[in-house]
Amino acid sequence: MEIKENLTQVKEEFKSDEKLLESAFRLEKFYNKYKYVLWALVVLALAWWGYTELKAVQKDKKTQEITAIYNEVLANPNNTAPLEKLQEQAPELAELYNYAQALKNKDTKTLDSLSHAKNPIVKALASYYAASYGRDLKALKALNLPALQDFIHLQQAYLLHNDPKAAQEIKALIATIPPTSGVYPIASLLKHYPATGTQKAAQ
Image (cartoon, rainbow, N blue to C red; front, top):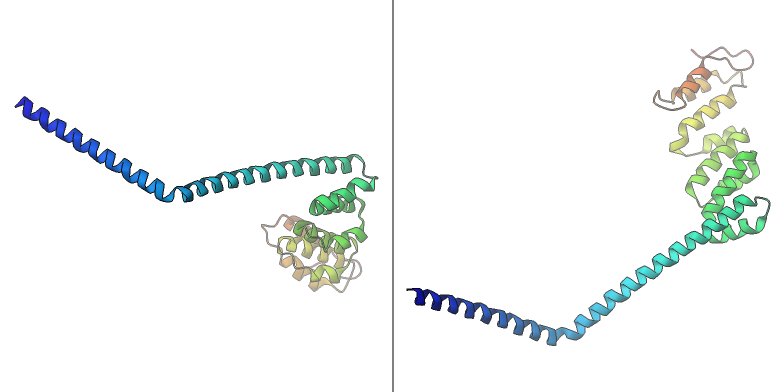
């Protein structure tokens, strides 16, 4: 009985080895048939890995160079050479720097030119402040900046406050500012003060 069991076990082991050899032969056959394709895929994978690594190194190097130029611009604001270099290497960062300087100096001319900036944030904010500092109601009204709409309406209401005939317009502008807005407390305060002249306070 024990011999029979041993023979059965040996047969099963032979079958297992046979299947293993069969799989090995199939694998070898598959490799021989497609070895050039497989090696090409390996080469392509290595080439792609090398390319991505190179691009990452180049990007990191460029970032470091731009950071160094930007620091030089901050350290020497009166030197135009680093700023010109920054405009070449990172135009949107240069726009952001110019915007910050124009805002600091209330430079409406620069702000007006930055209202056409490539950087969408700079473009939006520069457009708003150029119109605000220029006290240009028409330009403020023409702005289509949903994220700044409450600020725009508040600024319009503030500028109209000098017009004694603008009571209804001021009231309408303030009414568009929801209680959840950050400028709502200022809008509410403005609503309770009469404009210059004979205008009565909005109810």
